[in-house]
Amino acid sequence: DFNADKRVGAFVQDIMDMSLKTDKARDILDFAAKRYIERNGIRDDKGRLSAIIIQARMSSSRFPGKVMSLLGGMPLVEYVYRRCNTCGADNVVVATSEDISDDAVYDHCRANRIPVFRGSLDNVLERYIRAAGSVNAEYIVRVCADTPFVDTALVNTLLKTLIAEKLDYASLERSTCASGFYSEALTAEALKKAAGKTKEKEDLEHVTKYITSHPQEFSVKFINAGLNPEFVHEIRLTIDHPGDLKRANAIVGELADPLAFTSKEVLEAVRNKMIGLMA
Image (tube, rainbow, N blue to C red; front, side, top):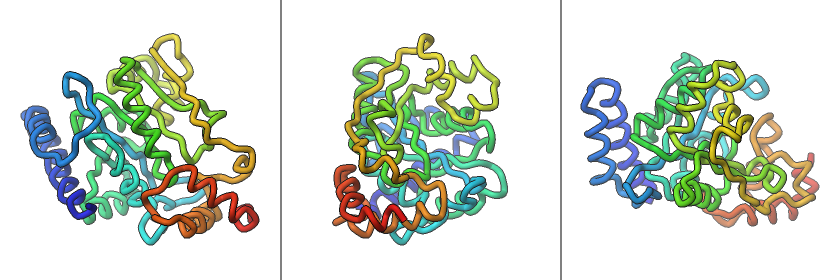
């Protein structure tokens, strides 16, 4: 239940805070993750941990403050966290920035026992590497806080594929996946390798851009998601503008459960409410 998740979140946050203050944090976190986290996460045969890392910032140019705007009665960042928390990863962490503009994200997460990490505002690649290190995760799923309909079943599929096939990077074929369902999985080592190869602003801001632009340097795989029917092509399922949030709330209102749902249920809600959602 969510109260149990909050207790686990508080424990993970305490360990993350310790990691900023002590050289022994790595051993403490490894012990804690294996012994106490109330979750049987997706791991490899060596027991190395996985984490979903949700990037969130308030300084969106198109929709400032969107991650704290309400969806389903809660801030968008919390909504995405709660959905991701149903997946099979060992940890779910919100990765925001150290900029004062993101104090509201950090404060809300702490008040609601949501594990949160703060790093560079502009170098999001570095923020991801440090956030993964804060929970000792080798396998990472990247999710953006403006994708409330991220496909949680595919998150698990990507993680399992990444580990089973010993890949550096696994994602969904863009042409087969409406943007709002999208996520990508990769290893911490792949992130570190990318960081060592580039200092380009676009690569640092967009986290996986170097990897996807240089597939010959990594072992990569793209999966057919089968989630991009023609009728959804003109409907944005990510939250980029205020109108997108209104549309997302309309979709959530059509779902039997506002948090536990499949992408097919979202598509059915879009089809049923096509005229209103296109407005």
